[in-house]
Length: 360
Image: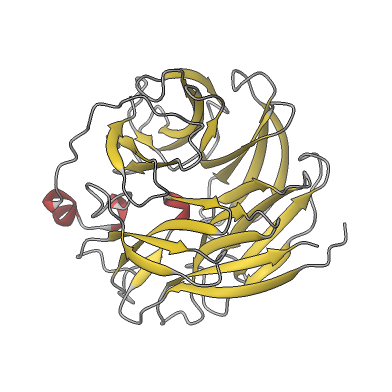
């Protein structure tokens, strides 16, 4: 496959005294040229380990908004209940986690999944046994949020939700989630469904109920024929044995078939993919590469996921592995907007950036 693409890069949030990261844990939404992105912000610590963050201070959920298609951004603290530490318990010392406000769930009311201004976002406590998850809803393009609303445990030891919804009707939606394995470790992906606007959910299926390492962080699209494609972040027996796999369901997420490995390597610790469909039907997976050369990449399929291009560079990184966690959306003019965290110096700040890509 040959592509003629152009990329432009746009700073979203960058401060020398902050560690900003992990957009994939939250969500990104687009309405014409208005785009909203959530991510987290903490403090740097060069001795913080694999991620150079300060574990002794709480992380805060941030919300960025662009009204010009991603060229410029304004950033505030996210207007969420229990936004401090949201989705980042594994990145804070236990005494900080215990100091956070206890999450109190609201009773979910009917959500109209066809509302044109809707955004739905998931939150979680941790990754392993004991982790709990919930979701928030917004009907005004993320100006305000309702919730949190509890996601059931489905008889699992832990649920680690990142935002991955497929809206099917005003009342029905399929939600892809990560559960712990039977030994309490992360993780394996399953599908569930609500048919009453998010008040109740029922279990549908495992994508792969017994992965050798882990399969986590699904990202899904529904094709015109109703089938669902889902990428999952995979790791084998070693931390540097990581890739992205692709699964397909042709029966409403009741059963799944393995399709392909569109990204054979994602580097040390791995990275999730963000799967989107362009307006012309092509599929794109964006992801961060934690192997040299570090950077943000994309692969493209012109045959609904059967085959994939070689990696295409969206944004080079001159720092280290502490990058990625992409979220991508497609603008009304078919340009792709991809948000991620990145660094250009291993000892420098981690910051949030967006790349706007024209695939021609």
